[in-house]
Image 1: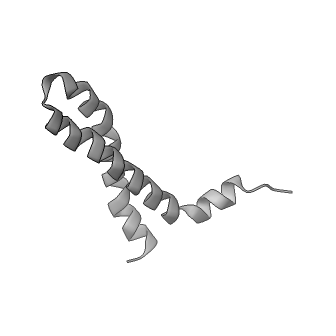
Image 2: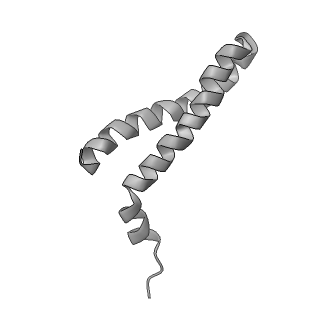
Image 3: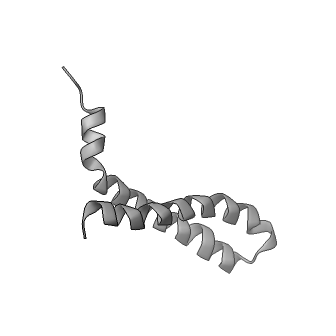
Length: 70
């Protein structure tokens, strides 16, 4: 799988996980702890994993834009 194909899969999942965090946090008062734990805590761990994968796939862009230029 090439990098662009991987990003087409990772980016929408990352967007859904980012949107999941505030909504699941706001729903804590109306849901059971088990539902909150599944949505918010596990979602947060998955968000971290997908953010790292996204960063790895875009590392060349990161280094070219944030490297010190002399």
